[in-house]
Image 1 (cartoon, rainbow, N blue to C red):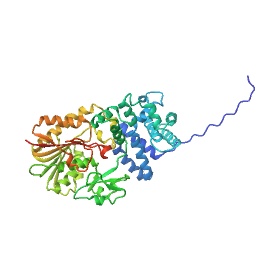
Image 2: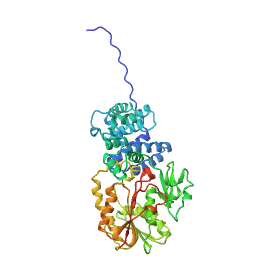
Image 3: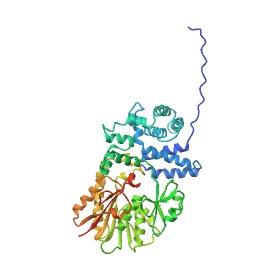
Image 4: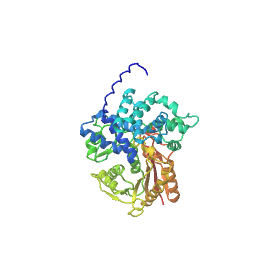
Length: 472
């Protein structure tokens, strides 16, 4: 038995309560809502931010950081998953989703922001202690320290397959899109590597807030008096807010005279309104009017010509949104809750008809980045009958000499040209008309006669439009 004296034990460190960071806790709550409830960040985040401001926890800088953390993490989720997968000793599917959300938030701070490495790791570990507990916080700490060993470019060299071996998988990892989405966008866009990379990059950029000055109710001159407001690129009714901000704080928006509306959406309404028709031009139809942005612009344009808009929306609560958007329209209009595939109106009643059909939303990935991870290729089969049914009803609803606009916020060929081609086979007395001259000044519109807008070429959502005239 040794007679050496024992060394005295070091006193245990006193337990330190985790530091609660309101910004990162809010970002985590938003990601959990997106993951658990299939919520959309653009619907979840604003009320969370409003509640935080009311409690006095947040200022404008805090709100900006929370917004960046949520949207940046969602946009780059595929890339961060590949990085985190290289830093853990188990498949990602075996990592609890709340833990993975904390890791993704930490990875974004390390690889996608200018937050210093030490601050990014320590803040993420403190968040883990608050929302996960001390045990799992140690796991978060170990993983993020591995993530911090390389910058984003260094990790992409390690986790993305070489472009020459698998171009689509390489682009999927580097630009954080599912492989099937990369393939579909590439097919629609055509061309080589440069174009698709520009498009995928644009999908990962934060879009500007764009307002519409509804004719007869607001003017662009009024909106341009707002801070950091500049004219739109293509629509004469558009104004862009280059520094973001809160649109609801603008008087014209609060009063419904203006609204938030992507320029691509505005161009669709303008092209239909400006398409030549044979004969009278008195009655217009928006057959898929919810939530009301295009209907409000169409209603104002119709009023300028003495025409009447009928706005139809199947879901009653969305029909209520349409009615709210049209309230105060300078001319007569009507809003009905009706199934656009089995409408209550008589065939051949309308001079102009718009159907902006439900779709996968692949054209709005800048605004709804989580949609890229939520959608599946089989979703196309679910939308196809509805899209064809709505276009069929639209063609039946327009009179001879009138025009139908088929629009969708997706560039996927199965939701655009394939739908139009199928219906034209069924309606030999209907012809495509060239939409390009109806969008003066807008470049890169392709060979026509239909039009596909692109984020990287036009700064808009990837809206598709085909204009069809009934001739028989």
